[in-house]
Length: 163
Image (cartoon, rainbow, N blue to C red):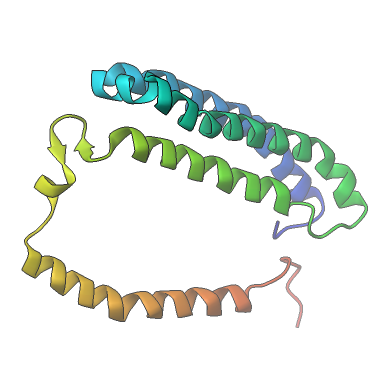
């Protein structure tokens, strides 16, 4: 999104090549996860859960289709000097990763290490968590402010350096 010309066309070609590797990785994790634990298998394939979880893989496949289609059309859009043409594959990729992490979180919760350590066993003492909470209250707004500042400074396309 930040480049233009031949480098941007190379990036589109790289994205096309890596799209199917990413899809294969998501598929491999999705196939392997229910076989890791009988609890996860039951959680995925029991009747009411199966219907409620169906939107996750179907939306993921739809997003992969949107990414593929938009990457195939992107060289034409870029030649028409559409500066926002690269936003669709980027946003769709973010959607794929969010859905993948949501599915993984649903499968594992409340376990951090499958059937070994749950979130309550892994948590620190309440006193330590309170110190961390106060630290987050101070540091998180600074990080958000700096991120907004950095995005404003580097907004737009990268161009040749000129003085």
